[in-house]
Every structure is written in C-alpha cells, then in structure tokens.
Length: 81
Image (cartoon, rainbow, N blue to C red; front, side):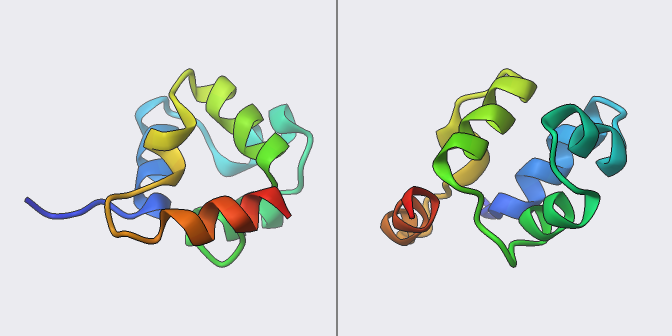
C-alpha cells in the first residue's frame, strides 16, 4: 500500500470538501501563501495552527500531519518550536 504524504492528505481533505486554498486560509486567519507552503510541505505549522487546521477539518492532527514514515518526531519538534 502506497504511503500518503502529509501534503497529499491536507490537499485531499481540502479538495474533498470542495474548498479553495484561499477560503481555508481566510477561515484560519493565515495567508494563502503560508497555507500553500504547509500543503507543499515546505513549512511546518506551529502546534497551535496544526490544532486549528485539525479542528477545521474535524480530523485528528495525527491523521493530517503525521505519516508512518518514521519522521514523526522531527515534525512534532518543528510544530512545537
């Protein structure tokens, strides 16, 4: 079974709901470019934003931001800093 990256999961969830990046960014109170970077995987959101994104989609943070790739600790550290 193919692993789904963090970026793919965020994009998939947004598209499944028929939402644009602009709409989600506005609802979350962040810029389009910042959300785009999070979805591309070039930025990790701080923990509080990760929680807001999780609540926005009604999905556990673990499902949206962590994969089984063994890289969870570096993502947790990045989100906490």
